[in-house]
Length: 261
Image 1 (cartoon, rainbow, N blue to C red):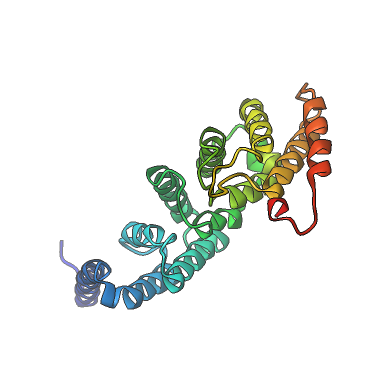
Image 2 (tube, rainbow, N blue to C red):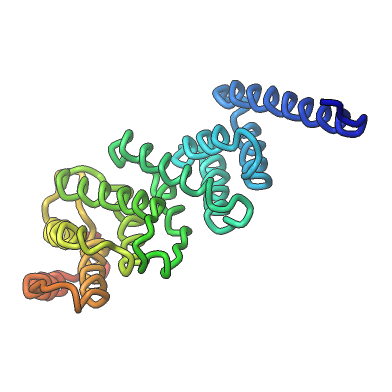
């Protein structure tokens, strides 16, 4: 097929641009593993992803950013977390497609690291927003399901490893509190059991003091009550144990005590 000179020129421009862009990204991926250049490279990648999240090879950019959301380097960690938050809050740039990829990568990352990550890496999920009309319908919402998989993995780990540090538990409880009205009924029974176990585990600490904090235990009760309030018509759960445990927790409170933080 014969094409005009202008079309040929445009095609050549596009192919050249993509080739150069791909080569540039490949170079960044190599340098990202070199500590001397990591800060500059991560900044470049975050800037690209934030500016053009719909462009070619965005999946590779998201992988690098997610891989660094728990970085021990505070500057790099903040850059990556801010970029993920921007993706979640500005979905108009990419029609929400990148959001799903980022949430799935975060879920895999949390699982691979057995929930031992910096709290900032999970705090980003609280920036997500969901269409409640979509939730009320039967249409699938994979991003929401993937997010709740993360929350449930973290809270389950907290109940089965009571003497280990739980750096993600605080932001996990924040997320469950924010999105408690969106939790599927099928999961609420398990969630209430997890919350009850966590709320009762405050005294089970080892010599290093690795246990669920007073504040986290208190938030477990608050979330349980919010979940019940949002689902009064569909659930028949006896909250007596929660009330008894809550009153006992209040009696434990000692202002200024390290145990009550």
